[in-house]
Picture 1 (cartoon, rainbow, N blue to C red):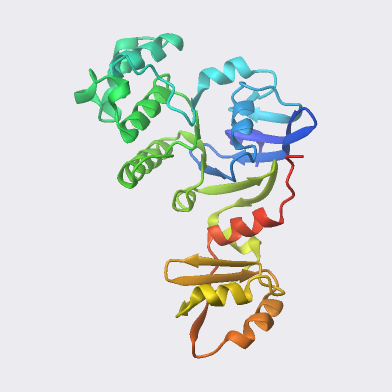
Picture 2 (cartoon, helix red, strand yellow; picture 1 turned 135 degrees about the horizontal axis):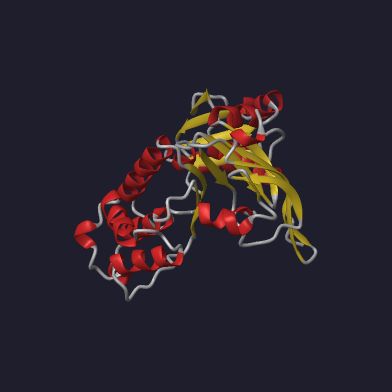
Length: 308
């Protein structure tokens, strides 16, 4: 597939702060209209990568294109075609929703600014709240305002950095419905998130830890590549059982999931041999398909910390 067929097509992207490499030789390809989930623990390099893509940070290495433009030399033009939603609400709390959108439209020199503001208000259902001060909005409505501001200049790519952090479940669901509608119209998304249910709603995923891209693909591809065998255990005194099996050969994870345990490892034979003495009537052991969370924890535990 040629480079022109990707909204994002970069490789070797690297960024160092002092002696620490926070983004290490990352390659990424995202198709137009795709929702690409970018996952990883805090401090893994996700935000740094997003900022390099949209020209807010200069990479130390790498090449490729963003929206058909060289992401290293055409950052000013890329900024005009990208919407970037930061982790922290960053609008004027003493201005109304309408005033904030009008201000952003001025910054982008949007033609027919009033019509663009009106369209943004209608698109995200904020017309009735247009005169409400931004500082009085709930988390969900602040999120809508931030998304509307990202869209006001009609970008081709949205970079959303943990956009639903601190937002209630209904607002999160409504937000993702809007994301899928926009993607269906051709808008491309690169979204960082910590929520596994949100990751599952993305078309494809990338998982980064300590600056390194450890896995990428569809949910099914990432789970399969993880190579984990997982047992679900139910019964009494699961905490005591967890203490007994944690750390045994082949047992990489013992994690409580509601009223059950998930026991996982990449060496299926070692794992079964270690838990064999505990396969009694006291507990019910069922082999299940590993989930995204199981795989990501496994990847994180085998990754090398780059902090020092």
